[in-house]
Amino acid sequence: MRRLPLLLPALWLALLVAVPLLVVVALSVSFPAEGIPPFALPGRAEGINGEPFALLLEDPFYRDAFLGAVLVAGGTGLLCLGLAFPMALGLVRAAPRWRPLLLALVLLPFWTGFLPRLGAWIGLLRDEGWINTLLLGLGWIAAPLPLLYSWPALFLGMTHAYLPFAVLPLYASLSRLDPVLEEAAADLGATGPVAFLTVTLPLALPGAAAAFLLVFIPAAGEYVIPELLGPPSAQLVGRVLWGEFFQNRDWPVAAALAVALLVMLIIPILLFQRLEARR
Amino acid sequence: MRRLPVAALGLALGLLFLWLPVLLLAAYAFSDARIPFQWGGFSLRWFAALAANARLIEAALLSLRVACGAATLAVLLGGAIGWVLARRGPFRGRALFGALAGTPLVLPDVVTGLSLLLFFVLLEGITGWPAERGATTILLAHATIGAAYVAVLVQARLAEIAPELEDAARDLGASPPVAFATITLPLLAPSLVAGWLLAFTLSVDDVVVASFVSGPAGTTLPMVVFSMLRLGLTPEVNALAVVILVLAAALLAAGALALRLARRRRGPAI
Image (tube, rainbow over all chains, first blue to last red; front, side, top):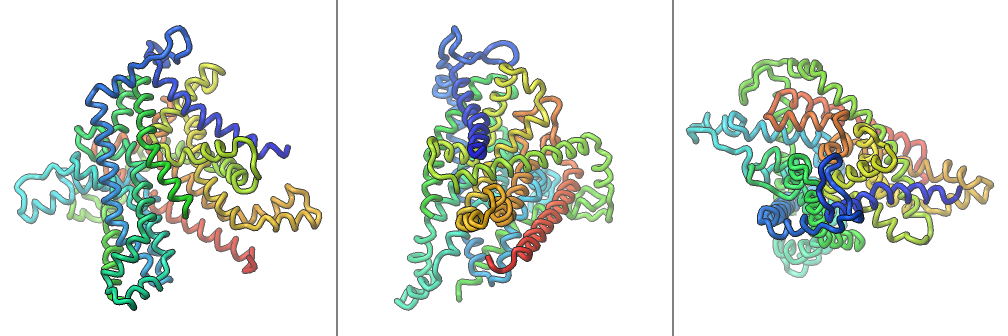
C-alpha cells in the first residue's frame, strides 16, 4: 500500500514514456513490410536493417531537412531573444502594480489557441489579406506580393508562436538582478548604456541562453507552422517525418528521422537542464 | 531612470506584435464582409455558421471530453510523480524516474506522437487493445504530456511546503493519509488547479500528437481547424478564435477567483 504512490507513476512512465521511445529506436532499424502495421520489428528472422539510417546519411534531401530545421530553430530563437529582451526589461521596470496585468498580456495569447493565431497570420499575409490590401490601396505595389507560403511568413509565425516562451525565463532572470548593481556601476562612472552592457547584460546571459534553448528545442521539430505558413520548399525535419509517416507510409524511415532528431537535440536539452538546475 | 522609455517601448512593441493579428481578426469575426479594411456592418453570421457546422461542433465536444479526462488524469499522475520526486527519499532507479518524468517536456511533438502511436499499435498486437484508436488513445497521450507539466508544478510547490507540518499532524494522531489530505493537499491545491488548466490547454491546443495517435474514429477540434486552414482561411476560424478567447478568459478569471478564495480560506498565516 505504501509503495503504491511510487509504483503506479513508475509503471506509467515506463509504459508510456520509456517503452514508446524504445519502440521507435527498434523500428528505426527494422524492415518495412506490407500490411498493417507496415513494419516488422527486428529480432525475428530478418535481423537488423541499416537502410533507414543509411538513407538519412546519403540522401541530401534528409540532410537538408536537418540543416533547415537547425537554421529555422536557431533563427527563431535569435528573433525571439531580440524581441523578448526589451519586453522582459520593460516588465521588470514597469510599476509593480502593472506587472501582473502585463505578464497576463504576454501569456494570454497562449490561450487564444495556437491554430486560430496562425489563421490570423494567414488572414494578414494572403494575396487578398490585410497587408496586400493596404499596400495596393496606397499604390505602393501593382499586384499582391506573395507573402504567404514564404520563408519570412514562416519566421514570422514561428516567432509569434514561441515569443512568450522566451519572455518568461528572461523576465525571471532579470527580475532577480539587484538594481543596486547598476547604481553601483553608475557611482563608479559607468553611464546608462555602459552599465547596461557591462553589468546587466552579462548577468542576464544564463537567462538568455535558457530562453534561446526553450525556443530552439520545440522549434527544431515544428511541423504545423512550416506546413501552414512556409513555402513548399521548407522541407524541415518535422514536416519530412510527417510526410514519411502519413503520405509515404515508410514507418522505419520516420522512426529513423525521430531518432536522429533526438540525437541532434540531446546536447541542447542537456545544456538547458544544466542551466535550469543552476538556478 | 533615463532608459525606462526604451524598455517600455520594447514591451509595447512586443505586445503589439503578439496581439495585433489576433485582435484584428477577432474584431472582423463580427463583420459581415470578408474584405480587409471594409467594415461590412456588425453581424453574427460567422458565429451562426460556426454553430451550424456539425463536424466542427462534434469535434469540439470530443476535444472537450478528451481534455477534461486528460487533465484530470494528468493531475492525479503528475501529482504522484511530483510527490515522489519531492518527498520520497532515495530509491533505486530514482535518477531514471526523474529523467523519464522530464522527458515529455523536451520531446518534439512529432517524436511524442510517433512513439506513442507505435506503442499503441504494438500493444494492440499483443493484447488486442486498443482495437480502435481515437478518444481513448488521445486521452492517454495527452495525460502523459500533461502529467510531466503538473509534476514540475507540484514538485516546486512541495519544495516550499515544510514536511514538518505533516509530521506535526501525525504527532497529533492523524494517520499518514489523513495528514496528507488535511495538511498537504489544501496547500497544494493552487498548483493542482494551475496544473489542471495547463494540461487542459495543452490538450485542446494539440494537433500533432492527436493526429498521430488517433484513428478514423477520433477527430478533435484542432484536427478540423488544421484541415480548414490548410485549404485556406474561412471566417469561421476567426469566429472560433473569439469563442476560444472568451472561454479562456472566463476560465482564467475562474482560476484566479478560485486561487483568491483558497488563499482567503487559508488565511494569512502561511
